[in-house]
Length: 293
Image 1: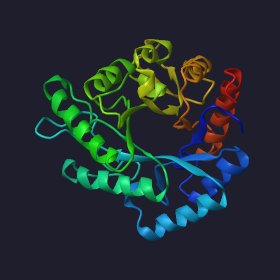
Image 2: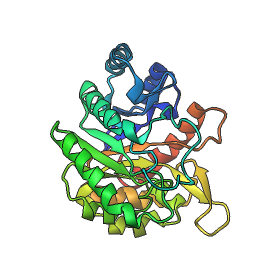
Image 3: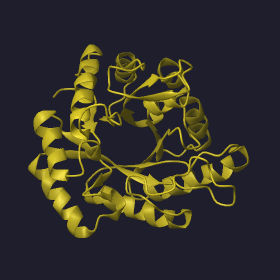
C-alpha cells in the first residue's frame, strides 16, 4: 500500500481478539500500521507485562507498526464541579479511572508507547461541562503539564476532539492549541466527532486548525437524523455526510504525513469485523479519489 499517510485501523473496532484484528488489518486490508486501544477485553493501560509481550509478538508476526496508544487519559470528570451529563455510568472501552488516577494513566501510557515503539499517546480534556470557561485555564495547564512530561520522554500527546468532552470541534480545538503552545501537544483531528457536535468539519472546522499541530486523524462518518446537523448517527465511511475526499486531499496538500486511522463505530453489518470491512472499503475508495492511495 502506497500512501502519504500511515493508513491504519483501531484494533478493537475489528475484534477484541488481537491476533485476529492484526490478521485482518495486515493480510486483508494490506495495512502496515495499527492503532492500539484495547484487546482481550482489557483497556490498553490495564495490560500486564505478559500481555504486552504477547501483543508485541503478534505485531511482529503480522509486520504491523503502532501509530499511537489510544489511551483514555483525561476522559474523566473535572473535579470540584457538578458531574457532567456526558459522564458515563460505567467503564468505556474498558476504562474506568478517576481523576486522581490520571497521573498513573499518563505514566502507564508513556511506558506503553515506548514498549510498542511509537511516539504518540491520545488524550482528551475531561467530560464536557455546561460552562467550561471558568475552568478552561486550569484544564489547559493540566494539558501543558502532561505534554511536558510526555515530551521529556520523546512522546507527543494528541488531544482528540470528542463531542462528549470540552474540546469537540475544530473551532474549540484551535483555541486550545493556541492556549497550549507546547510542541508536545498536538491534535487528534476527528471530523466525525466534530460533525456529531454540529460542526461541518471540512472545510469549516479544518480551516481553523493550525495544520502543523495536527498529529493524528480518526476516520469515521456520520449522517444527520433530523436534518439539523446536531442529531446524528454513525455511518460507514463513504455513506455519510463528511467530505472525506476533500479532507484527505487537503491533508495531503497541507503536508500531513501521520496516521489516518479507521475508527469504524458504525455497526450496521452483522459483526464489528464485517462493519469495519465495509467501512474500510469506503475509506479506501475515498483515499484513492483523493490521490492519497
